[in-house]
Length: 409
Image (cartoon, rainbow, N blue to C red; front, side):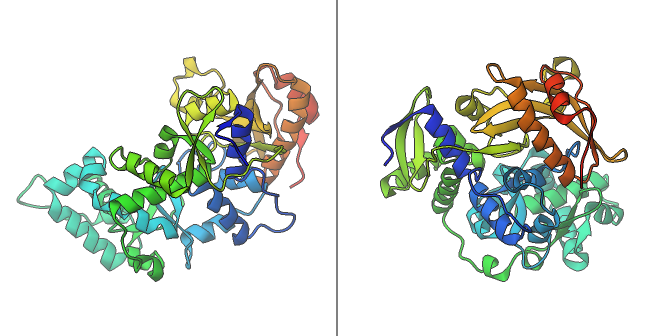
């Protein structure tokens, strides 16, 4: 039984287990059953349009399952009966449909929660919003471009334009009046009515109170994190300050959460009642910059002593580790980072740079990382791995890869 004080190493292993990094990898074909297990651990998959390597929502499953057919995730998200739906969770996310009722408070609070331009459109141009909703109802599923092409021009106003129509669609999406039916070839949303997207049983589920919904989301976040500070419990689903403290207190009273002290942590921590503490973690995988394991950077620093920033949001002159560096998880530690790019035309996984963390054995790290890169290249159907270029791990990694490495796909 865990005590009220745990070590930093225990906290790290608890977090990795909670996120699914100690679950056994499939030995056969990856199916929806495996996807359910991963999403049951993470609670959501963040979406991001960056495609330097692979779309962000596909990578967490690879990190936990190894190479898998992305069609498994596409089917769960965009084909009936849907298991995931798109909404604002931790940024834009794919979320289990069972959690949709817990997010209705956010939809109902769109006039306070939605970003500025969407709110302006809803408040100043309600006729446009109504027209766009009618377009989706009558023509859906539709893309923003299809709606924009038919925007009527008004004679009593300066006019509606395509950007207004897009903002109206996003307002309707935020407020839950439309949903994402699919994604088109350029990764744009294809919109439709919720009743034509979400399972009927989900839509028929009674709407919980705001307090119950926030408490439910805190509980999901706590299970996904294993052990966490308050800021991380709030950040997981980007919860408001109002009602959060009461939710935590109630979960403590119910025994779902237990206050604990983690050695070296300044903030108070909470341990989920079902959290496991494995004796060891044997991971060997790359982690997406948008993976819930690392997206709260202060937590990443406390858990792994790993200061992480992604270069895509940093001016080129200030980038320390390239444009799109992924942390490399070996055992229970983040031991390196590697800048990666998929050159799909050349069929090559490019490695612009690789850096080992202080105090780690570069040859040992390089051997494991080489295998992780082979797995990644195989999954991406790239038949070669380029010679690593910059960084103090580049030479050991090149040696481990054997020069320009061919990959069996």
